[in-house]
Image 1 (spheres, rainbow, N blue to C red):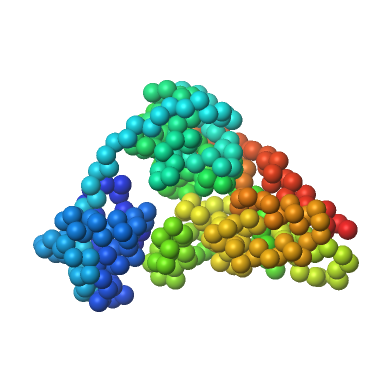
Image 2 (spheres, one colour):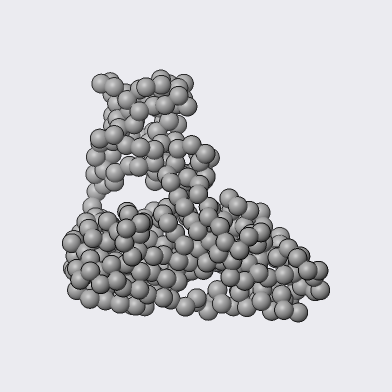
Length: 347
């Protein structure tokens, strides 16, 4: 199997051909550059355990220097199954039938179990709500999960209850709505405002080489990522402002053409307008809140998450062929934040 940059299976063999940029690089660093969702420490362990080959040779030394053209083979062992616990966690169900369920996820709810979140996730809640009816394609830890939202992003997502529904939905998400009715739109409150009313960010994304917990824009490599945005409202700083004065914040609608990890958050930061409240990609903009009057300043400084809400989800029902379309109003915390900016802008 030949793998492109950042595309790795959950387990099993994967092969990568080292390029010119990999020549002379340590084996562990080279693999960390090309794969997603695996830390460099984990890669070093896999090398030492004999799971990595260069050509026909098994290499057990992470500091081995890679040559251009080397065929790197990484064998990811199948994870040990860990059955998540069913938990009675309240869910807001937008739609449900025997094939699928659409959830309006609150901010703060993790989608599936992982490091630091063994319980209290959406999967734990779904196991309680749906019992054994969830699709098993996603694996033990991700039953029925077709796509996901970040922990602190609120809004709509669909979960498959049958393997057939999982396959049908996954095909639509892989196609990104190019040939079908799939739509995903988000409300995003960002610092500043783009100079145009609408635009597109087309910038490849991949795991940051400096911090594996974060996503970065790649000029070469990475995975194709496209976000379309439109300005809905612009908010000015307090007090009289001259015509054409720059906005301190703006409310955008963002439509995904692809669906990568942290895509909207990274793309908005990339064009100089990170999301309000985004501690990972907008930390440098926190001081902008000090330019606001009270009580808006306190509301913005206390907002605990990125200001992002998945408000629209449409797709073709995998069993009936019907186009289903769902809308979710912005939650109270985000409405309150927008209201704070709106109030100072109207003074």
